Length: 265
Image (cartoon, rainbow, N blue to C red; front, side):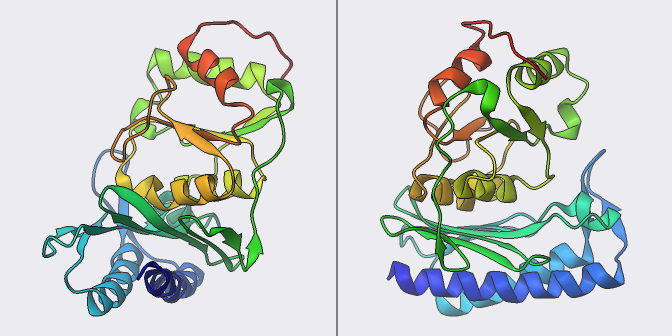
């Protein structure tokens, strides 16, 4: 059944993403849904497309979507996690870095992950046990095993940017690694870890729809993930560290302050 699910997810992500690209070119108005968070008609339009595709194909499946919330299923054990527009702030500012993220969980295990970036038309897709791909090219995480050679990306959520502990951590990582990047889309960040474009990603304050698809990509590309203390990551845990595996223990030590690592900027 999962291969059929992957096909549906890919088709839904492409249709929603292409709609986002059209709306991005025209420009849309944003509404606030919190002090820092935004929502647009594009979020809602893309979500409606994905929900229509998924609910039509799998009416008994449970769905959790960012904008419309939970849609109850019939106890099948399947649950879809949908972020129709990951990177809304980028979208509203005309910054071309955003994505559609769709994942399928079965009996507590993530089995399908799809992230579509419509501006570059990159389709990241993975199925548990079958590998991860971008536009049909197999993905593999990077071989980098030194902190001073690794490129790291983070979400650095707006609500925590004034926290002294967040700034200390941000500074520690920046001074120890080759550099930091922030795309503004957690789903894209995880796709980039899976493809070896960056070596590691961390974030806090996450929701399931932010990362579920990307976690499948990272795992199927040979990477690993945990919480920031190196413990098992359970879907719904707010803190995440995902990387190529070769850097994992070193990064956990940085996050847990077990060891100080001098380095260059």
